[in-house]
Image (cartoon, rainbow, N blue to C red; front, side, top):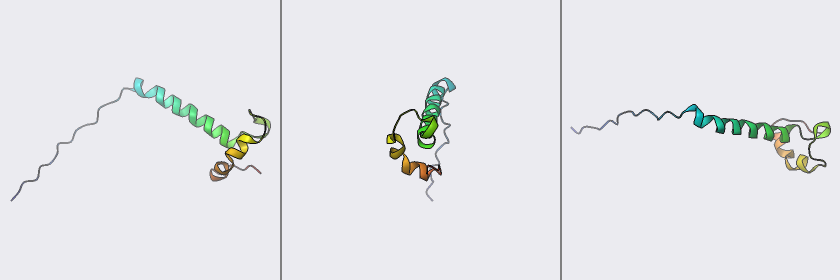
Length: 69
């Protein structure tokens, strides 16, 4: 009868929090900026005049459930 080699479980290397924290902050800031432009960039809170940003993210706005009309 043949014996099957069972691989030894190896633990994943631990990544220090100091290495992950800057990337997590960057991802959080980018997420907030993206949500702002998709969900809020129109009307009284607009940063960029005109309808360019609104028309660019229009379908994404409806996909995420933000009303715009």
